[in-house]
Length: 323
Image (cartoon, rainbow, N blue to C red; front, side, top):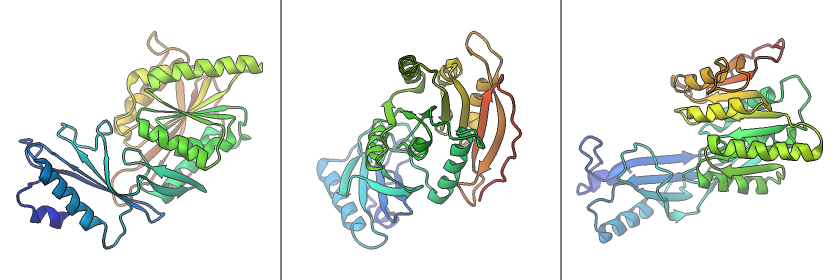
């Protein structure tokens, strides 16, 4: 890609200062399965149709040959202020297959260009193992009659990897393509007790909990709910945390922060004393552990287990950070 942009001196790299130029982003997704996806984002402003067609043909020519093999080549045209790929703007497949696939914890996952999937699969397996153990209450028997809420579920990796331990999994995600992937992943892996819904947590969670409560009434027994929150880097909107706080059937939360400084306010709001805005009993953190998903960088994932403040604190041994 660098060679091509240097050759095309008529198509300069995009400047985020003066908002001119063409080439904005070059993204690769390289999986343990050996499959690779390439996404090229460029600014089409001022380019005629013939130039765009030539650019696409050149990209296909370069990425369809050589090693490593590129299985999916997408472009995204964007003149937005965002510095990232924009999931609200269409991705156009110009070469290869629409999706790539990864194996994780003996499950297979389909990945679309706009879908979130952890970049480090071996470390992600360690991360999800911790989440599963803490969501189940660690040493307690698997809560087979409980419901797992997978909030900000992406392609369903967390929920599907834990579905065997819960009566039902309910996933919520704002990106439609990710939910489509999650539904396909559930079918491919023959997971029949998982449901996935498109929407914001603060809007969708109350509706789903109302449905679960109605099911509990019909079954004649209360529903115990465990929530896993794995928000984007910036954390969740405060209204989403208020929705979680207000759901009295949620007694345990496993919070996964890829940038704890950005997510700190979410954790504070889960734990702050009861007010009109933050209903029901607060949570309290009982244990936390970092997981290094990003070797040779200063970043890590932080997993925090929180329970309602009226639940007795069990004796726990916090595991050492995993490599």
